[in-house]
Image (cartoon, rainbow, N blue to C red; front, top):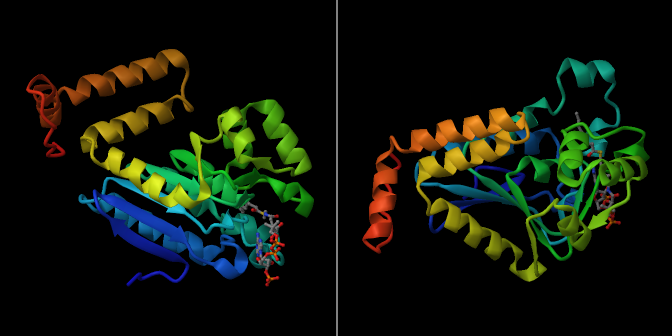
Length: 259
Ligand code: CO8
C-alpha cells in the first residue's frame, strides 16, 4: 500500500524504487501535494540502504503536463516569491543516488524541468518535450531555461522557450536531451532494468560517478578534472574497490558491501 495520494511507489527487485506520478485527471500536473510527496519519496529512497537507483515515470499519455496551472492561476508575486513557490524542487537534484526519468507522452513546462532534474532521461517513442510557459505569459521556473540550454544548446533552448513548440523523441535524442529512445510499451521495464544495472554496482562508486558527472555542469574543466581525480583516488580507500578488482582478476562477480 502506497502512503501517497499523488504517487505510486514500488520497490522492484534488485534495489530499484519505481515512483509513478499519479494524477491522471490532470495529466500529472505538478501541484504542491505532488511536490511534498515526491520529496518525501526521494528522501525515503535515499535513506534506504537496500535501494540503489530510482525510476521516476508518469503515464502513457503524460510524464507531467507542467506545474498545476489551476493552483498557480490566482497567485500573485508576494505569494510566489514570499513562499519561494516550488523552490522545494531543488531537493530532487540533491538526491545522492541516481534517479532516471522514464518519459512517455507529454513532458511540458515543469514536467520537462522535473525530467531534466533527474540524472538522465530515457524516452518512449511517444515522448514530447516542451517549455510552453510563454503561452501563459510566464516562463520556466524550475530550472528549465538553464538545464535545457545546457542539454541542447542555446539555439534550440531559445527557440523552444520563445515559441513553446514541442520536441519529439527523435529530435530530443539527436539534441542530447535524452540518453535513448525505447518503444513506449517497453519504457518502464527498460528503465527498471537499467536502474537495476546501476543498483548492482558498488554503491560508493555510483555516488561518486554521479557527483563527478554533475560537477561538469558546475565547474570549469581544470577544476572538474581535479574533482574527478580526488574522488577517483578516494574510491581506493573503499573495500569495494579491493573487491571489484579482485573479482575481475579472479573472473567472478563482485560482492559489494558498500564500504
Ligand atoms: N495544470 C493543470 N491542469 C492541467 C495541466 C496543467 N499544467 N495540463 C493539463 N491539465 C488538465 C486539463 O485542464 C484537463 O482537465 P479537465 O478535464 O478538468 O478540463 C486535463 O488535464 C486533461 O487535459 P486536456 O483536456 O487539455 O488534454 P489534451 O489531450 O487535450 O491536451 C496538453 C494535452 C496539450 C498537454 C494540454 O493539456 C496542455 O496544453 N496542458 C498545459 C501545458 C502547459 O502549459 N504546461 C506548462 C504549465 S506552466 C509550468 O509548468 C511552469 C513551471 C514552472 C513553475 C515554477 C513555479 C515557481
